Length: 394
Image 1 (cartoon, rainbow, N blue to C red):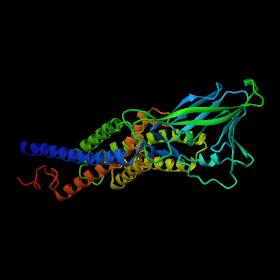
Image 2 (cartoon, one colour; image 1 turned 90 degrees about the vertical axis):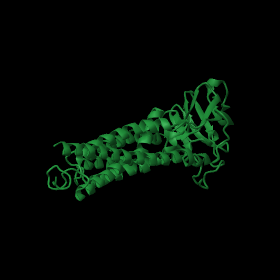
Image 3 (cartoon, rainbow, N blue to C red; image 1 turned 120 degrees about the horizontal axis):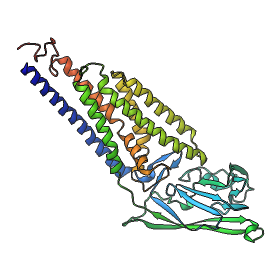
Image 4 (cartoon, rainbow, N blue to C red; image 1 turned 90 degrees about the horizontal axis):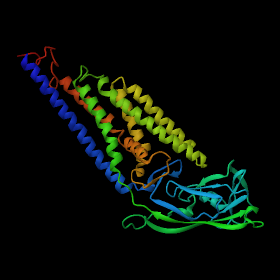
């Protein structure tokens, strides 16, 4: 009995070593891909959702807010400019050609559809076509945008609009000044009918942050899940079988968790985009489709068969491509638009990038185990059921 028992132990050790080799190789390849992506082509400005930039290396600072009753702040670096007016009267924000653009009053916020700024500010790159009817001389055509005197919008006067990043030497540095002209029509200030005012500030460029902390924090649970899956699946009773739930179920649970975290960050993005008037419906449809499909794949994958593993692989690839790849710039951005903790957002992005790896490793490991079992050379008792290698001959 000592011979077969010793042989089983040796086979188990070999399986663990080979499984560790598969995991190490996959993560080595992934590390190179992510490093190149995050450090070369994926600049911080590359991350976006719902038509808006989710990250930025730029930070506006206010030097003059124009009036004490105007409460300004910037969101996501230079992503959005937000104004809350507590003035008792009307505040008019002018566009790029000094035309009426936004009107703040106690009854809410109105936007002039005949202002060129309405269309130029529709996206972060000012690429929206301005209709011929929108001119500085046109009579304002007002539309209600908010029922309270608070509104956030893209304003390219606080943006760095060039595709070329400013030269960076050392830490943060000032790159330009900016100004937002206004007219305050309010008797409380002692002017009749009103007075001009200007919000002023400076734009700073902050160096990118290191992506390695969220990547490491994401790799730890992924490696742990793979270790459990391979240890249980490759030495359990179903090792080498066409259906191996012990091998697949830990990965299915991981995919469900990543899909859930993706849904949390996506809902926060969509709520913010809807509040800012961004086109959020198409993004919401894609988000529901991918996260819902991932939850279904996690349930289907629990069976442990090939179809379930392929479903998990599709879910992992979708999460990696549609979310992780799109938002990879968040790993390096110095400022994020999200209201969630920055490290949490970056950790979720890193998990999304890694999501395709566990199903792929399980697929390869399962196929290799089945091939060896069919050949009768990779497992103990593969033929004859005697527990002795070589088909039961001593």
